[in-house]
Amino acid sequence: MNYLNREERRAMILTAAKQVALQDGLSGLTVRRVAAEAQVSTGQVHHHFQSSSHLKAEVFVELMDQLNEIEDGIETSNQMVRIRLILGYEDTEQTQAYLRLWNEAEVLMQQDEQIRLAYQLTIQHWHAALIKEIQTGVMLKQFKDLTMPKIHEVAWRLIAFVCGLDGIFKIGLQGFEESSFKHHVQIMLDYELMAPKH
Image 1: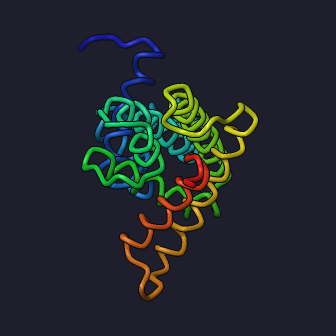
Image 2: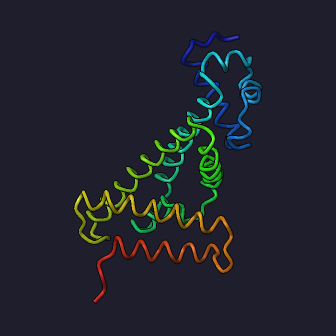
Image 3: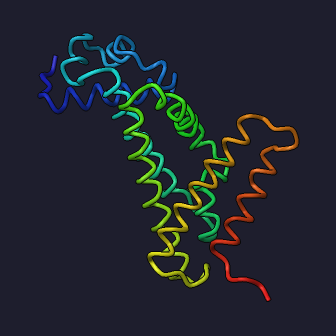
């Protein structure tokens, strides 16, 4: 048996926890399940993570950062498609498990302070990713000319709009299907990013 130092064992446990979360969600992420997946004792998991809440929160942040990396690796034809991808508008198989975790964390954060803090951090990461892509679109003259303070505001409005619209979509209002969601998001994107047509 190879000896693992503290950081290596912690990383191994975290890797196992991320696999469990992607398969079974954050609710399926128990210390016992992670220990079995990592082939360590539950005591080892507790030794490296203050609580199961802290473990879930760290796993969530790492997986959402991984989602950002996956999205960065997906080729898009232009910046509008890239923005739609980052907003969860583009339906790709590569991102589905991550988006399910996002939706689960949105519910769990109401009961778990660590998940709430992790969710807050990932929203800030999402905001930063949107800013970067909007800046690129402005630089490439694919979007209207926006100053940095304006780009900052637009990114927050897009996040707020998509989160609110997603909430309406989830409650299943009659006549509000995925196509309606995409239609309204595109209207907002055109309004915020494109120069008015005369």
